[in-house]
Image (cartoon, rainbow, N blue to C red; front, side, top):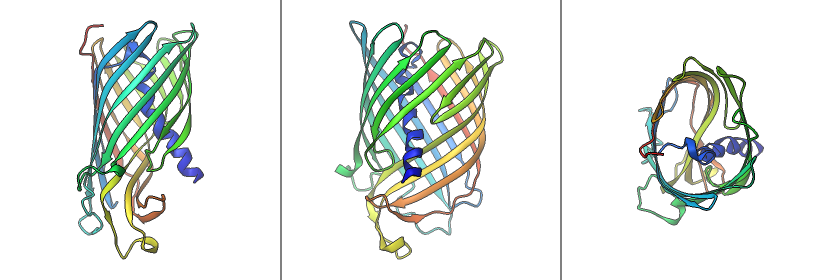
Length: 292
């Protein structure tokens, strides 16, 4: 249980990044990642599209509205028979975030994100629906540092629970900056005004509801599979090219730890797939479509 709680903290902070700085937000973001199977039971391809729709100013505050869609494709080994409609998963939702300036050093962001999260094999059921909630405080006395503290409530791993947030970003000079926290730790070197190379260690993962529950004689203690859970830790290098209106990045690395499980609604493992460490590749394209 302690391990799952720690990993959940890593995962959930990533969903708050866009709300930390209104001026640096991109209107459209497209992300793609691929982890090979290489003697594992499964390989994963994931694509995410985020669209920022509207920012409504309210005195010294902002109400932001956006859409978020993720698609995960799982490629199973042919000899693995436990793949009942588990190849395609979807996460569809919208976000409402409210950002306010407390004083010269502190800002506050609250966020509510209702979502549908399932393989949708049996339509949309109540178990497919979940809500994330966020309260985040950012502290900065200069443009060279940022401290983020807060709490998020989510069921990203299939069970609702609150988790703390802590993250510290620091720019040492025009060439070097670092990020300490969860889910990503990184050290970046600016090659030019537009190009940056980054070394990173990052936790990534997802969970989802299974539309049609699965029963199998090979499952532990005859448990029913009702949720899917995947987690990995990646180390690698990332190249970023950035202009005023867009940003592109290409990353590659290697996983340090991978876990892929089927679970019941009580978070008990019904089946654990055999997963080895493999190579990873990722791509991101972000665009500012509106004139600021």
